[in-house]
Image (cartoon, rainbow over all chains, first blue to last red; front, side, top):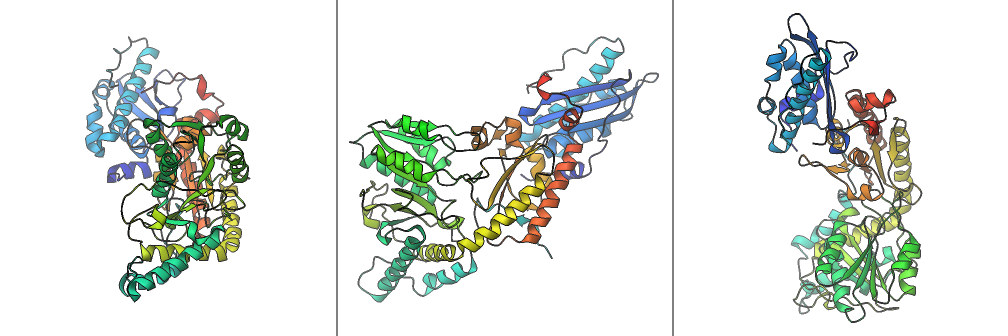
Length: 138
Length: 404
C-alpha cells in the first residue's frame, strides 16, 4: 500500500511519543482499540485547570503507519486547544490532513475516540459529568 | 555498495539464475519449433530440448523422465493432481485427506470438489506445524482415494514427515500427492524413497522461470492416471493438452540441474546465514520462531515480534522485501491462516515476518537485515502502549478492550 508523505513523516518522526503521569488529577488518559484488531491507541492530555487549555499531549500507539500518524497528528492538534475545542475535532479532519485512503479511515476514528476518552477521563477525575457516550462509529 | 531494498522474499519467488536464462534464450528466437511437430528439424530440435529437460528434472527427483507432465506452474499441477485423481478414481471412493496449512491452490481445489460431492478431511497441525500421523491413520477409510500433504510449508518452511505419511496412504490403498513447490531443489526430494505418487513443483521457486511447472505422475507400482482438466491435442500422455512451453521447459530443466549439483553447498551456506539471522533477531525480547526448527527448509525463518503490529512493522522495515503474517487491507485484519493453525493468537500472527533466503543472498545483506529489523522493532516498541504495559507487568488479558 502506498502511504501519503504526511503519514510517512509522522510515522518516521512521530510527535509527542510518551507517557504523562496518569495519577495526576489534571491528566486525562484514553486507551482505545484492541490488540487482536491490530490497533491500540493511548492518548493523554494535561490540562491547565485555570484556563481549561490543554498544555501537553502524549501518545503511544500499537498499529499500522496510519494509526501511528493519526495519533501523532492528534497530539499536535490538541496542544494549545481548550478542552471544548478539542472535543470538536472530527475524524474526517484527520482523514483529510493525512490523505488517508478509505480502508484507513478507522485509524482516524480511533484517534477521535482516543481524544474523547482522554477528555472524559479528565472530566470524571475532576468531578464533572461524563460525556454523553462518544458517538458510535462502529 | 549495498543495493536497497534487499530481497528476502524467496518463498514468494526467486530471481532467475543467469545460467538458466542463458540456456533458455536460443529457444525463443532460433530454435522456436513446436515440440509436437514431427515433420521437420525445428520440431525435432524442440522435442530434443524437452526430452533433455525431462532428464534433468527426473535426475533431481529420482523418477523416470516419462513421469513428468509439464504444466503452467504449481497451482495448475495441484488442480490437475487433485481434480484429476478425484475424477479418475471416482469408482473407488470420494474421500480426500489434506491439512489446514496447505497452500490455497490445494485447499480451494478441495473445497471446489466438496461442492461436487467429495468428502474432505482437513487435518489439524500441532504448534510446530506438523500433522499427527495417528490422526491421519484414523482418518483413512476404504473410500479414501487421495492423501494431499505438502512437502515444505511456504510460510514457515516446516517439512512434514513425508515417508511416514506416504506409508500410511499406501497401507490403506490411497494415492499420495505432495505439493513440493518449496522443497524441490532445496532439500533432497526422492519420489521413490519418499513414496510419492504425484508431486507438484514449479520453476520460479528454484531460480527458474515463471509460467512453467510440472506434475510428477507415477507410472508403476502403482500406475497412476489423472483425468485431464483441459481438452486439446492430448499432449503429455493425454494428461495435459497444450503446446509445450519449450523455453520454459528448458529453463526448468537447467534450474533442476543447477539445484542438483549445488544443493549441498547452497544448503550449507543458506542454513548458516538463516541461523545467524535468527539467532540475532531472537536477542530481541519476546520474539519467537514460528513452526518446527528441527524439521525445516534450510532457507526460511518466520519470526513473530510481540507487541508490535505487523503492518507498522512492514513499514518500518522498508529496506527489506519480506512477507508479513497479516494481510491488512481493511479494518478487519486477516492474520495468516497458517500461523493461526499453529495456535498463534491473532496479535502474534499479525506481528510476524517471513524471511526467505536465496542462492544470491549475501552475508552483507543479512547483516543489514539484522540491524534494520532490530531498529524497527525497538522503535515501534518504544511507541507501543502494549509494550509499556508488558514492561510494567500488566497482564494484557486482564484489560477490557473496546472491540472496534
